[in-house]
Amino acid sequence: MNKVSPKMAQKRTITDFFTVKRQKSDSVAKSVVSEAQVVGKTDSVKKQITLQVTTTSSFDKQKWINSLTAEQKDLLELEISSMESSWLALLHQELTKPYFLGLKRFLLSEWKSQTIFPPKENIYSWTRLTPVNNVKVLVLGQDPYHNYNQAHGLAFSVQDPTPPPPSLKNIYKCLKKEYPNFEIPKKGDLTKWAQNGVLMLNTCLTVRAHNANSHSGKGWEQFTMQVIKKLIEHRNRNGKGLAIVAWGSPAQKTVFNVGKIDWSLNLFLKSVHPSPLSAARGFFDCHHFTKCNAWLEDKYGKDARIDWALVDGNTVLEN
Picture 1 (tube, one colour):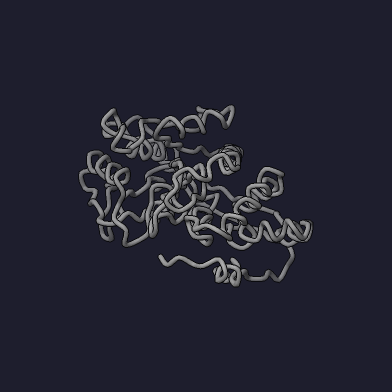
Picture 2 (cartoon, rainbow, N blue to C red; picture 1 turned 60 degrees about the horizontal axis):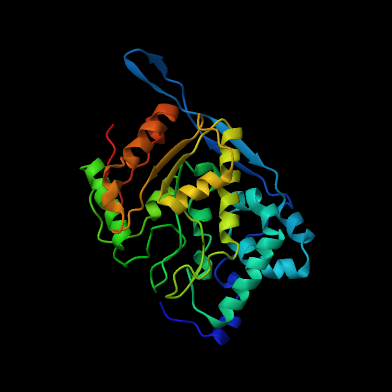
């Protein structure tokens, strides 16, 4: 990745990366349907449930933009341009709170003088790859990778052709133990998981180059806690649950700080972090990948399971 000078950066805006299509109507409506069929249940046949849910958002994006002040529009240009519509509908009220606007002022200053990861256009890639109604599993990370050609908006994932970092290598090792058919990739891009319904969310969404945790305590943690809270509430209102995977005490603390969660509807899986510093203390025997799929199948049927395979042509699922 080539470093962009501050002067060059000033000549570009986030609209260089995204083309926002104008709607014929001022109202933005989204309907997401996931189909399912109740096949039946006997003592000898596992229940297979296909859940049909139609979720319509009446969020009026243009009306909301028109309600913003000139400064808010400038500060929130990235969110307006690059955040997927269902997530913007869910989170727009959070974006105008003082703490978030303060975070954006800090980031504008950082972008002028520092190299920040991930690149602007990838900060909200998790929203575009995993829209709200597609999320089945939440995997919590912490800080983005802080070297070139690594962070691209998904926790634990790195851009092609970057090889997997040590923690991701241990994740692959755990997967291989749980699913012997899993073919270990040479690369570390987890985009397939995101597209299959796994929300790969870091609790802090940006970092200064070569300076781990440099953007911690600036507001991202408060924002991502609200992302988790609102996501759980949204799914539970629609009669659906969420499998939450928290590796390491910081991720687990984030879940605890969200507040009251109905664990009869949701699944909480916790273990030590996959880092080489802690993985040997139980991570390789956590069985989180198979537990996620067992829970999803029990609630929603076989089609709801996650195929954790990453190499083209490989699958970990059996019919």
